[in-house]
Image (cartoon, rainbow, N blue to C red; front, side):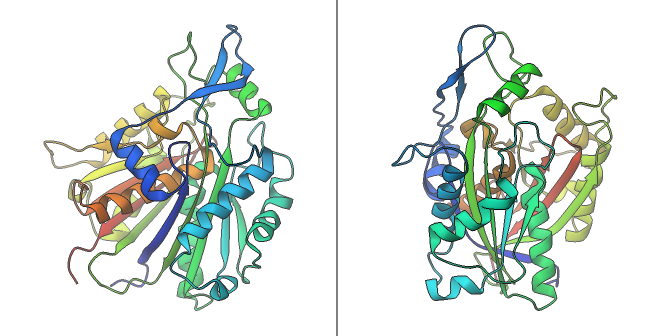
Length: 343
């Protein structure tokens, strides 16, 4: 087992289609979706539809993010004694610092609010990762570094995000990026939170291992106006596969953060054409955002939770899974995930 491998020990997930990882992933598998009207209206006079998480109380804003994150953490850490929680570093993944409509106080308050919800103070090495949809991949890289340096044996990675407040909705609506009656080239906004407990692999059957990570930057990002060649995503995929000692044709299927916009589907297609060198009869692509909507920094949590649940429940398309993520600022990330079916 390579020193840079990282095991996904457990997950927690709160989405608009389920308040736990198994229920959410069951909905992903069945392609269940439940968009509801928001309190906001689009230019065409219709209510903006969104994927909203229904909780027992009508929390909003940072309070709702903190509550969803706490629920996901409690699920991910269910096998761990609560007395041990404070010994874990927490890497908190949130929206990009420059995302328009970003919640005020996100960097300064959310971490403390989550600790207050749980009654726990997390360990030294904790921090904030404000990189949107690629943040979970960055969190895995940072967790791997903490573990390799002996600063932790297990790390908790948490993500929480929502695009359902008016500043965010108005920004994306003005940019013609929301899926509404007169715009089919858009996404439906959503919200979610998730948690991953990661640690060193034990080399046993039943482990989902992150065997490779790759990162790059795309200059032709969605707002650049430049012609897209998928250079960044192709580089990230190649780096992740190289680290894992695999090639694209070795992967059995893909899980991505695609949420409806043509730009990102085109990017995924171009990246595939530039990295696949052996023809495969089928190479399926899963995208849980079709059930959750666009969930920003939490998108990576749905990807990894779905991979783990599919492997555990036996409906995976094979043990080698490629995951990739892209954010609007041009950052690209890819993961090679491998399920150990034998020791």
